[in-house]
Length: 297
Image 1: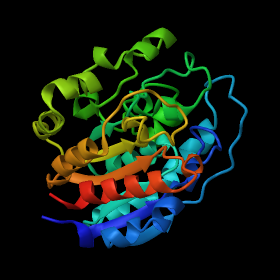
Image 2: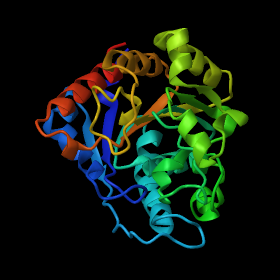
Image 3: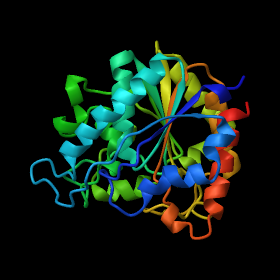
Image 4: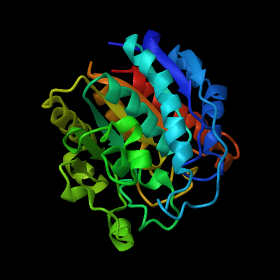
């Protein structure tokens, strides 16, 4: 099975949920590394980024809440027809707040799940977050937590149900407890942190997470991939670094498991910062792993 003739790339270089440090350069870096050609992917569109406002809103405690809601609507209008046509969208960020626009598109189409591959659980609450960055709380917002301006876009809260969500490979548990964040493990979300993934075996853990989703009456599921799910030793080009993480081989295994499912409907790739990759070697290794994970199964 291959989707190589079915990929459609959407560039979403928004940094509204983070800060203007370089993650908006992700699409350009992957393009230059041959990612588009190696996938034989069509280029669908580039959803232009909106201006970043560094002032935190005193009511929502968020940065760029209105801009993120607007951008999410614009992105969803590009993603939705791609999914309707039976193609497989690959949405290149940008920061993790672009997840909201992708899920908004799917929410209008039916009931979809989410496989969340991220070094962080992104389950912060605005009042507890030190910076007001939606990239640290996108999963909480997507599951209906947080200010309505971003969690209830177009009255479609939640964008994904707790029980239709898998969090996989996170390793920030101790840190988030210290910040007073929501506890993702106290919800109906299926969670397997990095330690648990390693205990089970990466491929088997991915199969078990996929099985959890397949037990639900879903029309399909979306894959969220934050580059910081990878080991800091091989992926230091991210803004919030943590030790440990998945190897490239382990990431390939997980993606191959997910892509083998006909219910896999699309993916977004976020947070990789090419400005922190001075010689381009990380970009090349990341590109190779993505291509192998998305096509070889």
